[in-house]
Length: 337
Image (cartoon, rainbow, N blue to C red; front, side):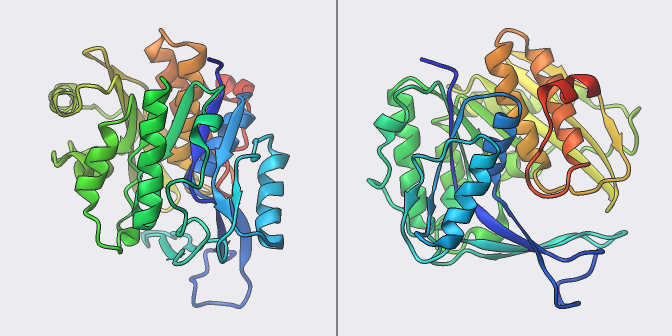
């Protein structure tokens, strides 16, 4: 085994407006590539890891441009499959003041939407890998994409890879008839590391969240309540080795508090609270957290506290980077810590 990491998911073209305009305003749209698992892959590569991204994109100039973008950040895309009708897209409206952000997906009949088991040679892909990262988003796109995801996680487990799953619940995507709770609950049963925020864990586990209401960096956290909550989660998924919880309180569009908790080997770890103002672009903050934690778990596998501190620092930095990708180095994260 090496420290090679494989990520699997749908890469998307993101369209957004300048100057906090609403989607109905103006005629110009800015475009950039993103998507949760692609964001993780780019972040890992920026941190110095050997990472391969697996997806399905159209055999077109748009598909090629997308792969070129990932390659320029050092991501291996040799296992990306060509085919299908088009690249999936989403339209993002930035939050402003107390107005929430909005996401409008356009992924129906995309290349990834129609991917299916048997399209990806997982045993070849996983042959020299140590970690497989996936997320609940791939299970929400279509039944065939969900089936391909479960084929991947079963193969990864059989081959002895660590399986990292980001719950990544997106309410607007679950339209093809599957039950989100049942599907995500089943996906977590294959996972060694689980990531998510309070709401995502609530959907996957059915356990009510413990509120995070920090308004500054000095807020108190009810560690006893979280420890009791994690004990319930651990009993529900006894095969999981580590549970990572990202916690964010959005006080306004440009003012967030951010922290995280880690439960491993019967012990609960906490880290600092960041009071972030201004927030430049919050998209991909969770993906940055996941990527940095995977990076840390490979470099410092016995130091849970260091991994958590590193992950949160990287996630905090993403708030200052426009676009979906967290374009920061390991040295920059250490400086932030």
